[in-house]
Length: 497
Image 1: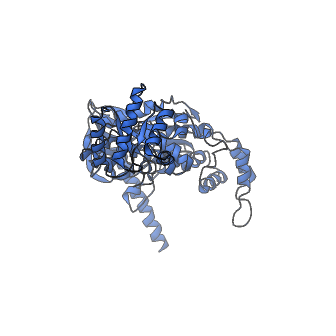
Image 2: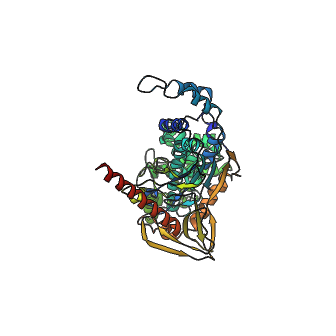
Image 3: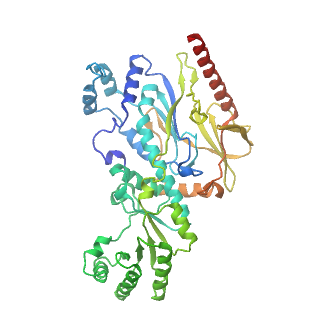
């Protein structure tokens, strides 16, 4: 399995924000860098105004951690940073500490391809606070983007109603790394193949593609272009027919298809890349069928997304394969997931856990305290509900879950319900203990997960809300911590006045 190290040979350890290092330095200077802490990476809203998300990016995260160390070039760079007084930002003893540092964190995460929802920790990091803190930026970068794209891909694939989607977005992706990560995430989210050859090589994804408009334009006639391509690659003929006149292009493709068949080959199909795709596909299907090419496929591209595809299906388009590029690999209508990484617990000097939360006037921005796990309840046909709970809680007698945004909304979970705990051990004391599935297993897992979701949750418009809540004792703890924090704020304000 390819890792980021295969993409960028220099150390990636400085793939972080400066404030992670300044906080790390502060922890070290204060002598609290070894204090055990827990951080959770989660998001607050599903992207694309949808009802679900698809977890993705764990493989990159694993590869990043396996190679994590500050090399000499990193330390040389950091030693040259200066504060506003012109003096070194970090002292040499701290840089020596970083040079010798070995990650000792325990990391649990939700399997790639799993359906996930707001407020659920996708990754939980437990370990020395300096180490757990310093991982925030890279973890967020990796998980946020790939989860966003895997979710978009799942939505696009649902819109085709079972027909294959080809990911065509590399040319307009957000850089080299964005293009590769997007191709990978799109495949896990359900796409059947990619045009990205490097992604195919690195991640074992099927690749697809034939020719572009420039091929046709480079010849004196469309017929000559098709004929020459068929001579060169008789086993890969999907003709792009809309360079000049689309339906005339279909007729020319049919003529070359007859020549191919006479030589023992079959025309795979045609591609439409512009115009009224519903009308043109219906007309093209008639031309192909009447000429005896009933098995030739119509592929369509042209700035497609899930809503356009859904509309084309409703219009009776005869498109059988969908090429989706820009609007898939960029996220288009939502360019970022908005996931966050928050401290939720820290051990005090007496070795007891102190649970932490960030207070806010907005309820959605108050994080959940504790050492968290997500338990998914299900029956033989579908997922029922998810309980976010502290790992020390007892759920053996069932539980009540409380909506974190509306405590009046509650759901009772009986003790005889089937369940699975979603966060799995990935690293223990800095050593990877996870037996990573293949990318095809991850893709299949995503497809199976979506099958277990109620259809209403998968609607593109006003989706039904899947029940996710805090286990009641965790909800009570969170409420108490909020009230205590607000009380302290009031007392402090009164002392000042």
